[in-house]
Amino acid sequence: MSARTSRSESDSPPAETVDVVVIGGGVAGLNSALTLARSRRSVVTIDSGTPRNAPAAAMRGFIVLDGTPPLEILERGRRQVRRYGGRIVFGEVASTEPAAPSADGDLRFTVTLADGRTLTARRVLVATGLRDVLPEVPGLAAHWGRSVVHCPYCHGWEVRDEHVGILATGPASLHHALLFRQLTDDLVYFTHGTELDADTRARFAARDIRVIETEVREVVNDVDGTLAGVRLADGTVVERHVIAVATRTQARTKGLDGLMLPMEDLPDGMGRRYASAMAGSTDVPGVWVAGNATDLSAQVGASAAAGALAAAHINALLATADTDAALAAAQGENAPA
Picture (cartoon, rainbow, N blue to C red):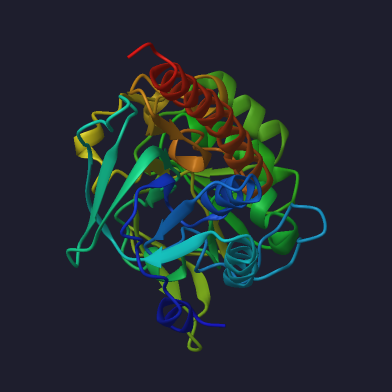
């Protein structure tokens, strides 16, 4: 089923305040919504319909679902969330902000979509995922998710024994090369302006990893549009069928500025994420974060597990809040006139 068909099945945002709004419809968001809905929490998932892994033909490295197309996994997840009463609303989040608390002092948040629709929730779970920032090499982005890959665990088996090139982006690319060397005997490391020390050169030489220091100018395609290699600044074309690149990863933050969530940079320029603590809790009361928005290296299984853990934490604290409110109401009713 296509993403367009999914959007036509978008639920309407409820008028009443819901227990939790989940911002992000990937596996972390959907698994959190599933956990909350099965606990009989009212939950709405806001899905922009732009998953990170959409260009990939299949999701890999997760038992049982290995080889399943990413969009099929999301479709199954949406159906399962709806089965337990959860709602899926397609749309872009324009703003998310704290709102006036309820009469009993409980937290409230208002989410406004780009088309003007709004909803109010007691708690917020951010599961927006991340975006990959590719080097600005002409032709590279056109092959992203197919012949241009980033993760040896997501794509490694599929590119085994191919002519692979590592396009260096920083210190992380050094270890990247060793991981892809496990998958192929034909590996070329394009330094792309980065420096290699003597020890690294020796280690690469010991593993038969060829180093090319001439600047990469563009990606070259075959007549059928498949990746054929890279053209260097001196005009030389180096045949490569796969390019591995350690992208800089950035948590998706659109529409979330009003929450004032703390962020932090990872070492060696690897990316920027939402800071989080136990079970995805944050420094902002009532707001959690799960999946790639806070764990930039998490694969599908880890992201789904993080969503479930955050949901369980949210549900537990809501149960306490509900009990506190019920007790306060009961004591008020029983107070002497």
